[in-house]
Length: 100
Image 1 (tube, rainbow, N blue to C red):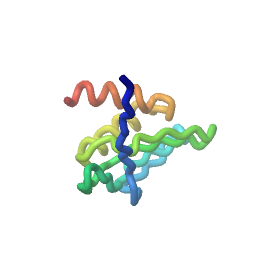
Image 2: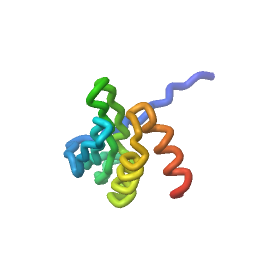
Image 3: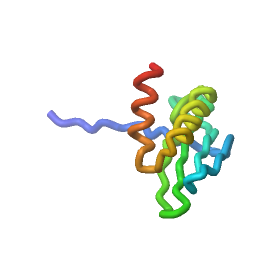
Image 4: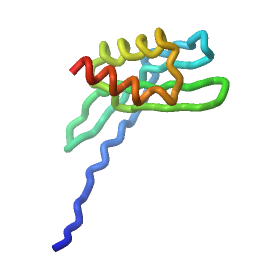
C-alpha cells in the first residue's frame, strides 16, 4: 500500500536586517528578523546570514531561533571565530548542541 505524504512548507517572509557586522576578514555577518507562518499561526523568527565579500560565497539559516538573544550570541561567536560561510551549519549544530 502506497500513500502520498503532503509536506507542509514553512517559509520565512518579510525578512529585515536586525544587525549587520562587517568582519575584519571581509565577511559580513547578519542577524535577520522575519515572520514564519506555521499551521495558521504567525511567529517572529531570527536567522543568520554569512557572506564572504572576496569569493561571493553566501550561506543562510533563515529560522535559526525564535529568541533574539540566541541569534545575536551565535553571530558574536561566528565573528570571534572568524567563521566563513561554509562553516555556518557545522557551527550552528555545535552551538545548538551545547545550548539545548
